[in-house]
Length: 480
Image (cartoon, rainbow, N blue to C red; front, side, top):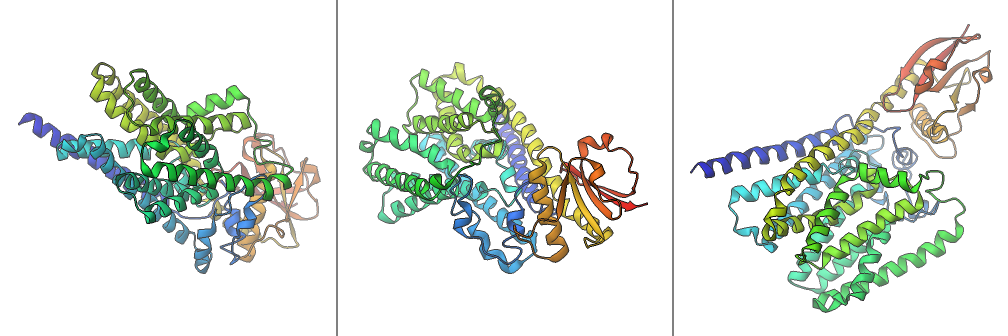
């Protein structure tokens, strides 16, 4: 009886914690919805918000090939400058992610023999899984900003996983067709999926996995054909026309990149450790494990070889695939090797706390950044951008990108429309002496160098507006 009461209390506590986490994340997705200077929101200002459709051909620059990215937002053009509408759509995708996460959890409970557990333990299992999944660094971040392709590709990948399970339970032509539609949608939404899926497909051929199920052969051949077609399009439409690639100028050393890859994605390390333990014990019963493990390592290797900063959101595309495979392996670990499984609960607890800490750190700039538009509006209201004032930006870290973001935002706020071509209003300067002495001015100055600002001879500081979460403060200068 005491054991039963303890189970009920524990299941309620964990279930309520999971529900509160979901409610909190939904709340912050919608809270203070606004355009931001943290990321690439200028793409939205220059297109959907200004009434201009985003076309697939616009995602063929800097070596990138993501023709399906942002196309869904063309349907929101009638809402104009209403960021809430865009974040409502993002929150809907978040809910779809949760729905299919729970459906997959139900399948895992059945496939691993946990369906015989009591309702209380099923709730504990699903709630803990939900908390860990939602706290994975980068997962929540991609739902905090409309610009991330991943907030579309992640729900698609979960629908893909659920459909794949369904296909192996009962195959049908329509399911297979829908599965390949989802597969291609992921490829053309984010090019990194090619790096993820290619090793899986090749290993499926090498290990003759097509013999494990009647549908496997068709899926492997169809996936290989889709990847091959994507690579043909990429080489002909993008690669041969590209001089400067996206990752150039963002390079880190291999060791520094590896360090941040682990620091920002501890789930990868834990997941691969659990899978390695099961492989060493020869208890791995699911062929998909080796596919996902190799594919995940290939994505990590791609980022390290390219020298790109291993930001948490970049790895978020592999989380759904890796998470469920690891979850199955942990269940098997408990079943087959209890002496090893005693280390799993504290490991999961530490992982959850660490992931929560990292997620909070990566989410804060995006939450703070929602005040950017308000800060810029205050600046416009105080100092109208006209022929009587000039706007400057002092060179600092990432000043080229910051200048572009500021340009688009200022023009949009001032005129209600923005375009990439018209955003040329800010003058770049190396020295404060370059500010025209006979004109009022607005100066964007790096906030980490404010102590070096000095005293103006020809102007006096009228207003300083700190743009939270952005690397520049806005300073309104009035002529003496």
